[in-house]
Structures are given as C-alpha cells and as structure tokens.
Image (cartoon, rainbow, N blue to C red; front, side):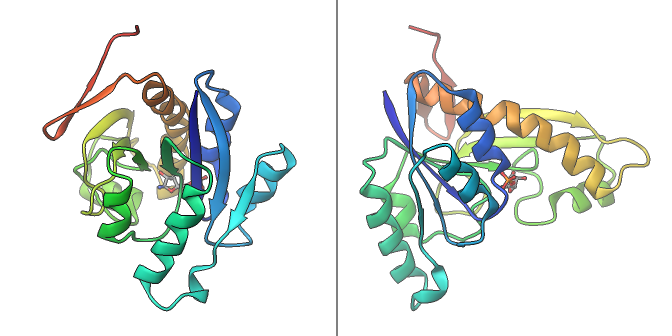
Length: 200
Ligand code: GRF
C-alpha cells in the first residue's frame, strides 16, 4: 500500500478523480492546499480524508514556504506526492527532495505548450490535436519524464473552454491510471524516459 499526498490550489477535480478511482494499492493520506478557500479541500474533508492548509502568503519567499510545505507533507510519510492543479512554482530543493516520487498533470501534449493558457495557445497555433500529460516533476517547469498522455481533437469552432472541458475529461481518466501504475511499482525511469512495466 502506497501513501499518497495530493496538493491542490482550487477546485480539485483531478484530486476527486483520483480519490473516486479508489486505487487498491494506494491510500490517500492527505490533501494539502496553499489556499484555504480551495473547493477541493471541503470535498476531501467530507470524505474523511485528512486536509491541511499552508498559506504561501504567510511566508517570506519560496524557499521558506517550500521548506515548511515539505515538512508538512513528510508528516504523512508519502510514497508519492501528486500535484493536481497546485498553482505554485516549486523550488529546486523541494523537487529534489521528492525526486522520482513527485508527479504533475499538465493540460497539453508536452513538450508543447508548457506554462499557462495552454488551450488558448493551442487554438491560436491551429494544432489539430491537444491533450494532457502526466509527468515526473523536475526542476524545469512542465518538463520531466513523461508517464502518460491522452489526446483529443481540436474542433473547428472550439473556444478555449470547449477544449479545456474535452481535455479535462481525459485528465480525469489519465491521472488515476498513472497513480495506479506508480502504486503498483510499474514505472521505471530510464534516462529521460519512463518505461511502464507489465503487471506482476
Ligand atoms: C487541470 O487542468 C490540470 O491539468 C492543471 O490544472 C487544472 C487543475 O484542475 N494542472 P482541477 O483543480 O484538478 O480541477
């Protein structure tokens, strides 16, 4: 059984998808947010999951916040830390501390469209396919070994919201699957690539 800590900043629909997937090999040890008003916190608490808030505004800089955040997370003895719409840039020290046990979901087909406003940019570029990526986190933003991707078509008259909704549906399928592969010990980082091992 792997202990999982999920970090959110907002609605937490990916966190909900992971909780609802009830991965047999994983236990959600806690949901942590940098914002007390993150809607996902109440949802988790209602289901008896431990929740915690660490407000980044109370800290003097990123290093101090990340040090306190790691101490809080480590209190739950995580095997895996899952970023699910956690809207903070993490320091290299934090990322190194959780090397190979920190994953993120990004709403684009990385390495295309790192950063924010992915759907607007995808539409503006005229790409025909968009999607989402689950990856191990490294110090470089939205980089790191890719665990899984899902694609969706970009349709002629899509608004950014249309595309976001289509991608989000795939996120909710992809992220629990990636968490499960990790919890089953089936992800092997090999150079910059992730190999998915067959089931035991
Ligand atoms: C998702 O689109 C995710 O890919 C991105 O932030 C959004 C979080 O949404 N990193 P939610 O809070 O999981 O609903």
